Length: 238
Ligand code: CA
Image 1: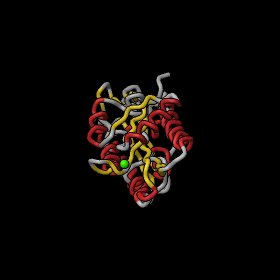
Image 2 (image 1 turned 90 degrees about the vertical axis):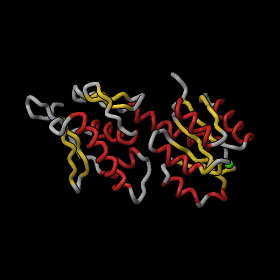
Image 3 (image 1 turned 60 degrees about the vertical axis):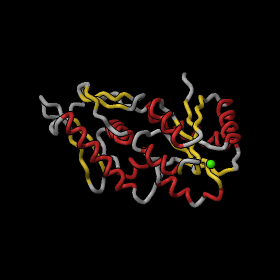
Image 4 (image 1 turned 120 degrees about the vertical axis):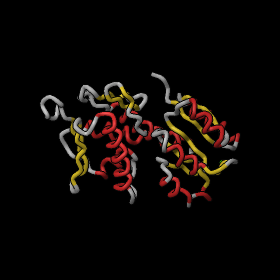
């Protein structure tokens, strides 16, 4: 099995080398970036399974980078931050981070937290449904969905929503449930966030498949449900 690939963004050389070494000892593949510019450049060409991100960086804030990354990757992001930056943790989580750890930290704790996030990721990747309608393909490694071979161009979160809704066929999934499965924690804005991403997913599915091919139903008390319609029979074809 190929090892998980971690991108470590940290400007203090000694700290960066120390964390890298620990992670490599655990069998992870590690790439390093000492600032935001280098991290962004790296991410243009490579994909990380998980990103360990410092907050105070020489060319800007890790929070800002995290916010930008959320549009392009669903890989877990874990902040490594000084105690004095603790007030920024909530901001960090709101910026889309999955977890954080405070410096100075115990290496075992860092590794344990990374493992938790990667386990979640793995569970998610393995949970791709095998009962999709024939027109729809989900490529779990690339997190890409296609309708009749045409890329739906979903954002990472839209892809995850689609995968969960397909898996939970024949039942409604509440917005809270979707949020905690995909974003991994509970915050005040969860229902609204899900709604925004659902509407993106609906629009893209509709664009590729037409609105006769599926029904994405919302019931206030119950949540969301996705059904695919067979054109010949007019019935759910699963
Ligand atoms: Ca720093």
